[in-house]
Image (cartoon, rainbow, N blue to C red; front, side):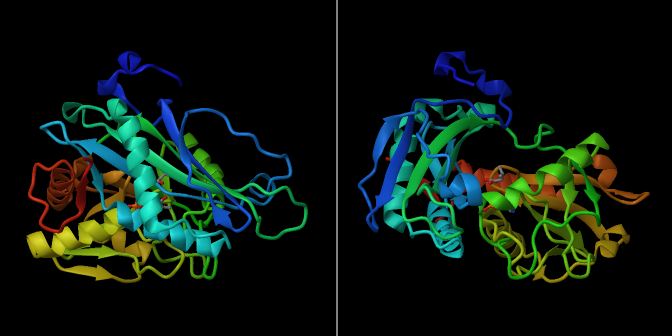
Length: 344
Ligand code: PLP
Ligand code: COI
């Protein structure tokens, strides 16, 4: 959707693309990146034989700019995204995009589109999407020699239409998201293409998303496909071990720190059998992500068995972690970990 700022209803945003005024574009040719520039948002030209179109050589990141109560614009741990972008590029044999150049470009795009950052009161944010694609025309499968680095952004509301209320997940043994030695830990475009069918089927059956299992034993919780998974089991915050098949979420890392350092909650990163989630000792579950923030899970179903958590209400610990995370991000709570960058 293309809209002027005046036409956007910031109070009723979903997670849908709304065009803003400016994007950033940099080209990689002859073994180097050019300086890049801000351009009016618009289409790019691609050869039909571009590597991304045929072999999916593409990676991306997801970040947010938020408004604080006093109208300042903040970014949350942007260097973490820059570092993960380099890791993803390395996995697909793409050229690294320098961390400080990445951060400068993100700030440029946000500054140029600052009037699209939803006001504090709306709870919305400006979602920032840096991406890199292999553009060289080729036929054989090999890394491209030419790339585009692009950043666009879009004002958004909650990723799951429910907002901070519970979603319902389905555990399926029919599909997996990633396998050992694959690309699960990185943010490659192809990781997401394969989740569309499972998600479509789950939605048709009335669920919000799939809760994926590991691909070897089909037993251990992996993640949600667009967010990481956490459970409260015997008062401990438990999340799957990052074994290379799971994206190393920046929100997850932050939530683990908040839980331990601010609330003294014990945390564990370990294999979690899906059967554990159906036991009484598992009292809350939620997922974490830039888009999902902290989304409570109201129920988990496997075959004909459903476990409902807290009558579909967010659990006490889940709510405490959400309030603290968002409070830090929006400068309502002191940023004792030095995570927030204020856009000057
Ligand atoms: N897992 C996947 C597959 C994701 O796409 C995301 C979102 O980026 C996450 C987990 C959560 O990561 P982060 O908290 O860094 O956004
Ligand atoms: C994010 O949380 O930023 C994601 O990338 C998840 C999804 C929108 C792909």
